[in-house]
Length: 441
Image 1 (spheres, helix red, strand yellow):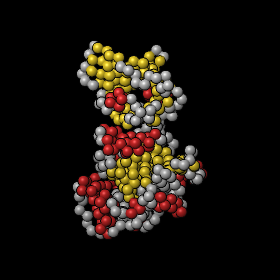
Image 2 (image 1 turned 90 degrees about the vertical axis):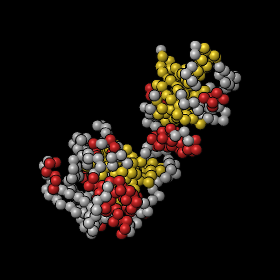
Image 3 (image 1 turned 45 degrees about the vertical axis):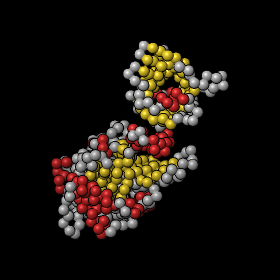
Image 4 (image 1 turned 135 degrees about the horizontal axis):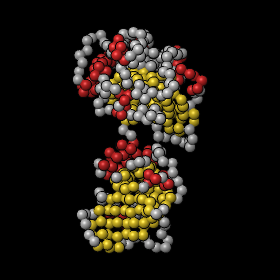
């Protein structure tokens, strides 16, 4: 995550050029030439990690294990320093991984997309004060969201998570790469002011490894407040100081490990952090009910990230949905509790002649199914009222009517609250408090 002087909340890494930078893991042996006119001429620029002894390159697997082992017990993501043994292991592992490169064109690879968690960073003298303040605190979690595939919105965002009870700081930047160039974007050229951390203008060693960026907005999102507080930085007035770059020097073939160097002379080690959605789907697919508390936590996280602000009226609600997981309320009817655990449990929502119809199908065998049909309609932004008027068992050609459950005049109308909705996942809560996770077939 590269950072310019003022808002380097997360990461800026670069191949260092100054004596101050050389203190960061001895990360320099740089041969410089004038910036070449074509990529075929750029073989004169080299970067490697060196040590006093000749380091024998290990296999990529061994290097990954050695790297992670070297930084496991390091406090403050490197702020507290390293023992000579840890430093030696780190240098050797980084040398091997950067020589291998992993994915050859990382900024063109979908493996670079997603949320990355910062594990370790070196501490060059050129790092900005804010970067030093936040990154070195173990109580905070530091992320980088990389969004490069969209032609309209290419971004690199840095997030400091202060904990669920406090909130987050998100620093956002527009980005530009060789394969997805932002029109009119001018990369950073000047070293900048020393108080903000000096920037390098070294060209990238390979094509499709650099992400140029320019910070354009930032805000605190505190859990106790319903609104965001702008980060007090006048981005438009700072010019080149809001710009920076990061070079992806290693991206593993499985897309889980990344080494990055930025324009301020820092090396960053990052791991791909599975999204809450991905974690949720993995947990519910395991059918392990002992993980229900974790599933509940992930559902609560996703509620705050729902892309649909008015899900009840969204066309995305329609389609064939498969029930993956449910937690039934104590007062849910007996039939619902029994059928919710069946693997072939579907709900079909579709519009017919101006009316939205819903059908629930629970397939119990080749010839036996329980079905319920009715209508539904949105009421407000996130609630859908549901009326089921045809509940039956089907055994081959036979149709056997079943009771609706609570049919008393005092029964409350049924509804579903949409807690999360995207193209293929929905999380809902029924009128009796039961929770459901569906995926679209």
